Image: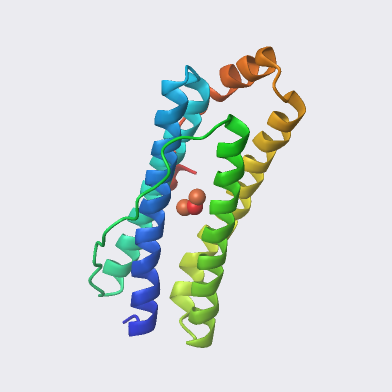
Amino acid sequence: MLSKKLQEAINAQINAEYWSAFLYLSMSADFSAKGLPGFANWMEIQFQEEQSHGLKFLNYMLSRGAHPELRQIDKVQNTWKTPLDAFKDALAHEQVVTKLINDIYALATEEKDYATQSMLKWFIDEQVEEEESVQAIIDTLTLVGDNGYGIYQLDKELQSRTFVPIAEE
Ligand code: FEO
């Protein structure tokens, strides 16, 4: 059985993952509205990934005999001036999520909850990948600057991203 403190922390993390999903869906819609389908696609895949993260936490709570509580999701921003601004916000957001996950891991360590530590290892690795992939796009956008052809090429590249369900990774 999960401790009350860990139940609360994991429950809050379910909310944070769906809040992340909302943020990326909002970025996807903004890119679509601005005629950038590849950027929109990349963010839509991110939206799907975040939902799968929320579900993974939810299912973990159930597997440990805890009852998840779905809570109100905070409002998210709905427009960004440039793709670089959006990706910089995405990186800052992922850094917050990484800290939240690290904090749950620290709590699970303090409580000697080895099963929760084991479950969280997947998320710790995932956060490294997420921060790295967002940073790579920031680097390219910084190089490209306001060169329209460069943005067009990157948009075409981001169109190829597809969703990979967690179990198949
Ligand atoms: Fe679920 Fe982007 O971390």
